[in-house]
Image 1: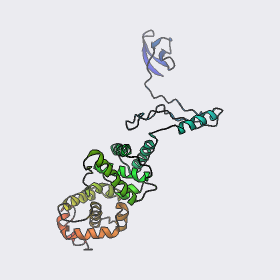
Image 2 (image 1 turned 90 degrees about the horizontal axis):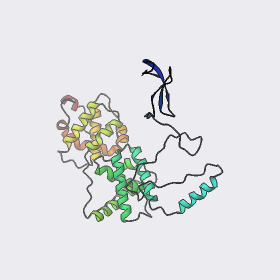
Image 3 (image 1 turned 180 degrees about the horizontal axis):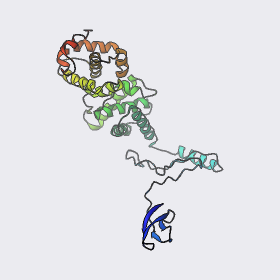
Length: 312
């Protein structure tokens, strides 16, 4: 109940809301103060087929322009054991037998969505990966190829194009049934067909070590000061002629920063967080060591602290 001014009682009185009729009624004299009011609160009625299903969802998914029917086609649910179960099962079989050109696309989009969620990717990357898959599927059927590898490769390319790169190892960690080599072959296959369609090379975006830095530092629980120092070191390292992959440079820089901090990280832990082999991190560290005094920010470590770093 709430208090409203009643013109008949000429005072504030308690009112009763009749939600079925949309009326607001004075509890003292029975006068209808407001009629046919719109209830703007949430409506949590259940629209499920089964009585024990309390899912309040009452709408379908959004329109998907990549599907021929926009993703708005009707899907017959599985039988629930009632008397109409036989009819439902029969209709479901006929629907399954019917030709659905988007069936493979729907499965691929679901796989992309699941992988994106596992990697914590934003919606724009997921949508870009779906667009890439659609383009390749339209140009040439993908029957006979490892669908998991194709989907993973689409996601890898989308991450590169959106300047949020993920390593092949990271992509492979959320894929079931595809190795790094298979994902690499699928990537080359997709890029080849996209180039044929566009008539020009596909822009993949340049990978920098700084692209991985914040994510790797977060995995290791490093402080903001350590992350800031690592980012500065990585940016300075790009001016040097060090022929190592960006991810190897990122891992080696994290190793340097943690050795100069109060809470040192074991090389094994850095290897697990970055998915870079310990030997590769050591070799990259050796390449960076001769330039260490130039790379380390003066606000993070003093000259005397640098002497404590081992050469190998």
